[in-house]
Length: 379
Image (cartoon, rainbow, N blue to C red; front, side, top):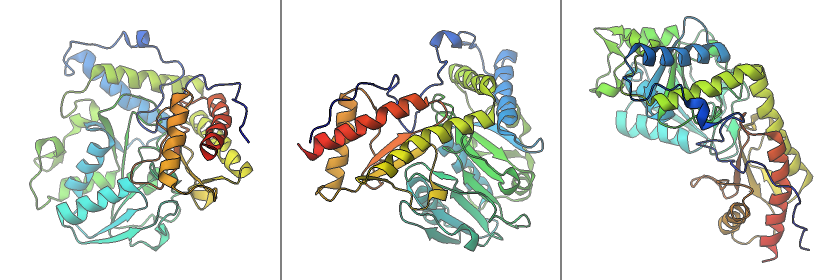
């Protein structure tokens, strides 16, 4: 049976998991206040960067005694900076249930050569976070962007831990509750839930993380771009808008636009609600069709941003080829761009459901997925 072509198309076909869709109010003209051609160290540049930090703190509810810095190289740069400057004082617990977590394991075990216990889970599953030794430093992703599996909560992290907890939260910040009292290092990038432009990372440090930085010197040399202390003291300017290297003021203006949009719709609760509503559309679609399923095994760990799905029909003989064909057909129809599963993940689709995506667009996409599935089954 060949399904009738769906009558409704998503108004915005951008469902990429990074860079992600721009906020619904985005317009290039709204970036006209960016101080282009000016030094980021001029008063106007520092003011814009400080405003981005202040709005981030306000919207995310970051405690006043936590430090927030804008650093180079996106979330990767922020997380690498944290690992290279703070790890090594004690053994590490390395946690991975998808490709980015696996990358952090490689850095610690093969590059930094720190004593570490490695905990892994297959795509779709999650490590037993309650079983870790939190007297060691613990490195993990809060939301697995490439697996669609997230931390259900932070209750398993003890308040009296001796080690630091380092969370790569790039596809979780602004979309999922983050328990700041359980997180010592948190990193993310603008191009995920807020739909900002690439290249800039956010580094959030608890007082415990600052204490580690000021009282521990790694055994290895640190590149200039990683250095967060000078003379045994935190370089405070980094956390007040004096960035380590030159930021794009156009990207800063774009991030400010997204933050102010978030404020206008009701802040963090509204952002969470938009993500939840978007993801629910996909989850319900999977529940209603026996040929497609959520990659996340436990409903409590389903991501509400990077929703990963797999095809389960017995008629499919070559899963990767079939999934690629469906994604290619959706792109050719102009209804979904960049929705193929991550290259290291199981074959399927990855549909970004972050706050900048409209629920009506996710709903409009679902019949097109069914249409593309039937077309490829019958091809």
